[in-house]
Amino acid sequence: MPKEISDYVRIDSRKVERIKKAIPDEKFSQRMAETFRVLSDPTRLRIISALELEELCVCDIAALASLTQSLVSHHLQNLRQLDIVKYRRDGKMAFYTLSDSHVRAMLAIARDHVRELD
Image (cartoon, rainbow, N blue to C red; front, side):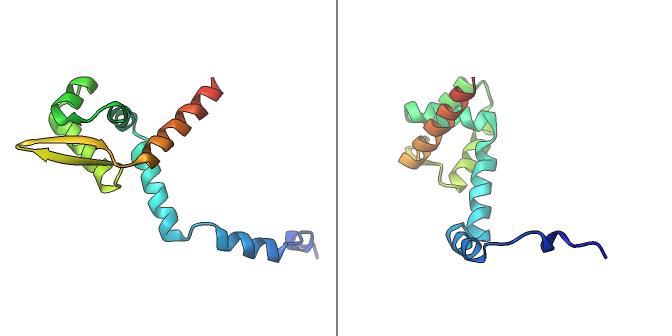
């Protein structure tokens, strides 16, 4: 009878258990994956790159990205749901900025990574 692969593999159960405790659980991993999914859209990346530089209203972002205000609002809604951007109201206008320094750090790390690939 042929031997199973498991007959040749020795699992380090202490290492596996230690790492299992350290990695994110399924729910947290799902949220991280959703963040990467939203950030994987090139238009959204351009929007948050612009917001990294300055607070902008929807109409400014639409002009920068050559998109309709409706489409920009849709992208911003996706970014808001994951707390990547936040907004403040001034009368009827809404002005958007990045939510916090973590978003800036993610952008900087991604830029550095891509530059290293070139």
